[in-house]
Image (cartoon, rainbow, N blue to C red):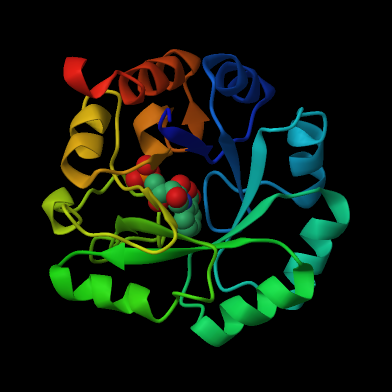
Length: 217
Ligand SMILES: O=C(O)c1ccccc1NCC(=O)[C@H](O)[C@H](O)COP(=O)(O)O
């Protein structure tokens, strides 16, 4: 199976087209006002409503209330909700039930003990996203171009689908996949020339690098 790829923080049509042409599986839309990648529900609809299946539209939220989820889901069809804040397992379950969509819970990782936090979401979340814990003083809970020690995930088995994120780039993604065994990867900063400015060439390079067969990587 080819590695699944998510390009996160889409704000421009050019990016959608590049990601689609290069074979991305998921496109991420950030609904967090403090982010340089934030889009309004209406802008999100313009960007992705026309997309063919099976491209999946992922909505990224940080501790969203129901009013925000209602506003976004009333404007744009999403296929997966990414929860990137401090959502408890109970809140994840409530969102999943209320909106009838699969949920991917982000787990911030800096050390081995952080992986224990993931256990609480087993049986609740549909997927996990292992991302770097934000550096001290970071303004955002994700999308910081920070990576973590991939060997923490080496040899671990999880009873649900999971993605690897955090500081991935065209130059390091093949090695990250090799070390962690990830079947899915997520990138934002590593395909940008500045926060919020995606680069089509970097998107193509990232996807090509992630899909190099293991023997050649
Ligand atoms: O991208 C943002 O601005 C953002 C804001 C708030 C929470 C999460 C955010 N981004 C998460 C991602 O884009 C990815 O899921 C992941 O963290 C990878 O980011 P990066 O290290 O920039 O590739």
